[in-house]
Length: 495
Image (cartoon, rainbow, N blue to C red; front, side):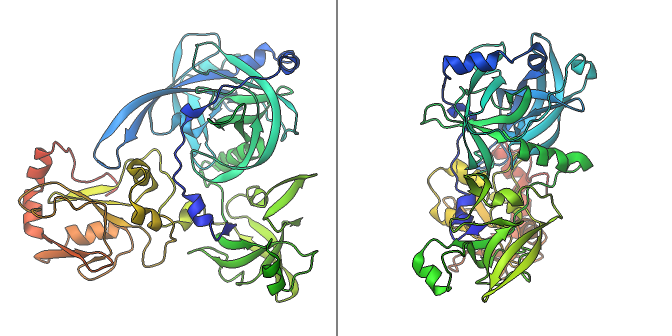
């Protein structure tokens, strides 16, 4: 599942936004056919969502700013509204408005899957749902199947309906999480504000509007119902577990020389196991040089795809994503010339297997200030705000964690004071050891530094460059430095 290049691909910091939506239109004949099936009940179930959100500043982790966005949603069973995670991400206040009305109702988030860019919200005043028929879910649509996209895009306040057809179904990178899942490509017009709105076919939801390509015409993407229903089944017990990952590192078997090395005939296809990442349940079950032939009985091709419908191929992760946490996925494996079947329990998400986690939402940065020295941990959010800089940090973001090192700790910046003379220009400095010892994570580093009984604490990087802090002076000056730089708190809430 994770190929030789996968780990880096999972955390590629390409930051698109909902504002990249492209204006598209569908043929008049298609519009006519689809619109004829639209009825008032469907329109009544479509809502507009107003979000006030907080944008954390990971370069100045004690700061944040406020912004406002709007999106769309659909009423589903249980007095709930289905929308995108990125519509409600980092929210501080939510409101929704019904179709054909002007009154706004206060709403709250129930569950979020930032992985799959999905969220379920509800309205505190349950009278909001009176006389609304919840929408039901349909099956994965066929290629060229007609769809109508409902929502409240920019350019007006009334409900907008655009139409088109399904043009492609395969795995794509979800911009919000940067993870890959099955996605439906459509040619219906999708614009900012459409996010979270449903795509309807035959009166049922077949997908939720997610994103579109800014440099292409008439290409938009939907979260399909198989992903939506996985999310809804997941949260049925009151807890979100997410989409699991095998943790395997694999290599495709398309190269004829590599195939010859493993004595594979033309009828044997699959992927080669080259290892597994830290804490994966694959350890002890798989062996290096195993060749994975099939997943849950479905043949894996040499390019890592499976035929999930006749003549339609996508990543074999498709069948892993049908499982919930704790379930096992079965693999047919060729090991030293013999075919065996292995069951792999699914216990970890991608985030559990990365040294630098995927982009975080709904949380503030972890940091603490000690004598004017500002410490934090390396995050995808920080890398995003740094832009194209920080090559060493980007290299670290492609590494896997170990028992010895589960997070990367940084001296983010130095606030000038009598204690920090000579170190003003130090920043984004990776700390490898504290007082000659390594540490596994940011919280351990914080506790060791702030509770040290030594007169001086000495930090060093992997090259052995050192920085010393007078502990007594750091504690003595901390409040004065915070006041000087108008910083309200010396540390984040999680510490």
